[in-house]
Length: 76
Image 1 (cartoon, one colour):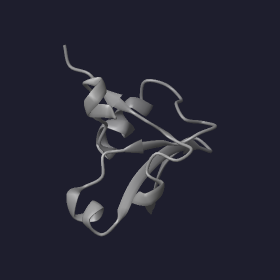
Image 2 (cartoon, one colour):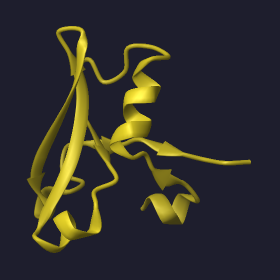
Image 3 (cartoon, helix red, strand yellow):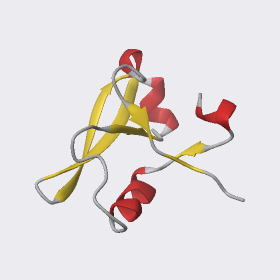
């Protein structure tokens, strides 16, 4: 979906940098780019901000887009 939109998913590091600009995902979570070796094992990563800090979680790839959006970047 991100590729179809012409954007790339944020990496965990980019997501942490985004959170320095403001408080994002305080009531929801966003999928982020997951390393290929982790994806091959069926996993996916998502992040959010709670209690003043950024958390990274994992879930099965079968729920990759279920109930969450993703954070992406667009270079112009």
